[in-house]
Length: 379
Image (cartoon, rainbow, N blue to C red; front, side):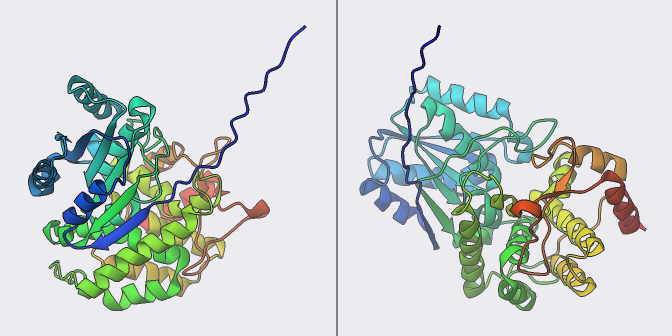
C-alpha cells in the first residue's frame, strides 16, 4: 500500500527586462542600481575577462565605489578557451573566499564568453542570484547577452552545460565597439547576418547596402552611428521575437541555431582559433548551400548570403586542416541531435525559416547527403 502526496508548484514568473542601447552607459547603470533595479543586494561582483578588465572593468569598479556601492572585480583569461567548468569553479571559489553569498549581484561586462560564463555563474551561485549584462562587443550585443542562455564549453562540445538565467537588464554600449579589433567586430557581424537570414529580408538588404559604413573593405572600422544603432536594435528585435515565443528552446528557438550545426563543430575543431562568428559564417555558408541542394533557397539567394558574409570580411570556406570526416563526427555532438541523427535548421529564402512535419524547425540530414555536399563544396 502506498500514499501519494502532490507537490503543487504552479506559478507565473515574469522574466521581462529592458535593453538599453547607447554610448557611455555606466551612468545609466549606476542610476538603475540607485533606483533598485536589483533588490536586497549588498555586494556586487564585476565579472569580466583580462582584456575588458583594463578597458572598462576597472573604470566601472571605480564608479561603483565612488557611488558607495560595495563591489569587487573578478576576471579570467580572455578567450573562448577559458569558458569552462574549471573557470566557473575558480570564480565560485573566489567569490566564496570573499564572503559573497545570496545577497550579491553579478555584473557581467564584456563579450559573449563573459556573459555566457557570468550568467551561468549567476544562475547557480547561491541557487541563483541576479545579474546585469553590459555588452562591449557586437557579438554579445547580437547574441550572447540576450535571451538568458548561459553555459560553458567542454572538450566534447560547446555550450552543452549551462542554464537558462535571464538578466535584470542589458546595456549595449556602442562606444565600446570603437575599441574592438576589426576581427572581433566582423565576428559579431556573422550573428547579425544570421538574424537577417532568419527573419528580415529588408534588414538583409540594408546590410548589403551599408556594410561599408560599419567596416570598410580594407579592414578599417567606420562604425557609422546610425547604422550601428539600427544593427543593435534589429538584432534585439529579431532575437526577442523568437525568445518571447520559446524561452526554453523547445522548438521555435532552434532557428537561432542557423549555421550553428557546422559552425559550432568548426569552432571546437579549430581549437577556438576560429572566432565564434568566423565559425558561424562558415556554418551559414554550409547551411545555405545544403538548403539550395534541398530546394529551400534559390542559387541566387545562396550567392547573396555568401557574398554578404564575404563583404563583412568573414570566411566562408572550411579550413583545409579540418577533414569532412572530422567535421561530420563533431556535428554528432550538436545539441539538436536526436536518436543519433544530425539535425539542421534551414532558411526558406531570405528572411524566413523552413518548418517541417508537425511544425518542427529542425530536420535530420543523412550523413551521406552531408558528405556529398561537403565534397562538392571543397571541389
